[in-house]
Amino acid sequence: MGTGANLPYIRARTKGLLVGLDISEETLRICLRRIERLGLGPIRLFLGCAEYLPFASNTFDRVLIGGGISYFSNPGLALAEAGRVAVEDGLVVVFEQASFLEKLLGRIDIVLKRLPPNLRPLERRWLFGGKFYLLKLRACA
Image 1 (cartoon, rainbow, N blue to C red):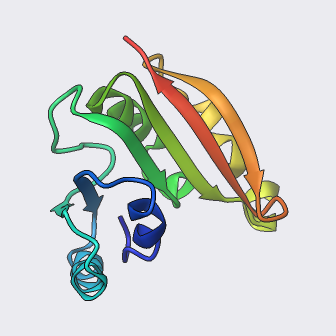
Image 2: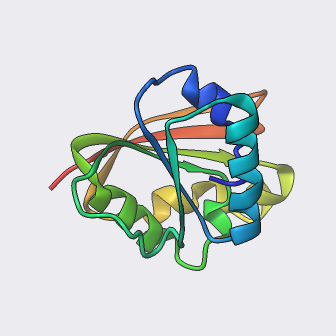
């Protein structure tokens, strides 16, 4: 979830309940203030980590991992968890920076290298002159 800087863009594309998770209490506090200031609800925030999601299986139509997955302690487990909480045929979308350093270190392909069996790739799109990529994955049994 981060500080919620992307929430206005996400909210513009959906009217339903948004659920956010972050590992930092302070980051969630900042996000909550942004939500209240901009009137972006309904949004529920949870403290936790992507590798051990505190949600039931088959809960969400869409799951967004917005930045930082190449620095998670276990990106493969985070992806498997995203696939677990997505409904069958639901979308898991990874939005990640692809800076020169990430490219040099081979981190831009970490998602595809660690793709669990419960996700299959649909599309990879480069954005902002190749500085970010968006990867769409389909949740499967």
